[in-house]
Length: 159
Image (tube, rainbow, N blue to C red; front, side, top):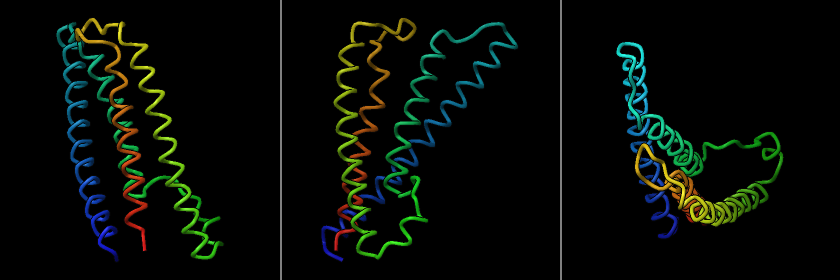
């Protein structure tokens, strides 16, 4: 294994671990918030004014940070029945093509997300006192990390 491939394997493992911890914390936070919301609603006929908006941001973060985790750990959907019939070299070419396609898709997603951030910058989330553009930050971060995961996959598999 080359030095670059070794560094990529180490970086990919660190990214996977960091995303697992972050996603676990986000999920724990979301479950706690929703539990508090239910208790307040049914026991005291009250709720947290900002709970829905924060819950939405947590859910978006879970979804868009989960995608790069799946990509880096190669846990995404694969068509193994088709790939098993290909020779090893052709299978490797398909894997490289899919990672390159993922990078291109992530760049396109990031571009569209920046446009959405600009479009929503003047719309407020009144309960939080911030711009509505904040809803798109998890998407932008997810796109950047998805691209990084695909790059690390390419470098880690380099021979």
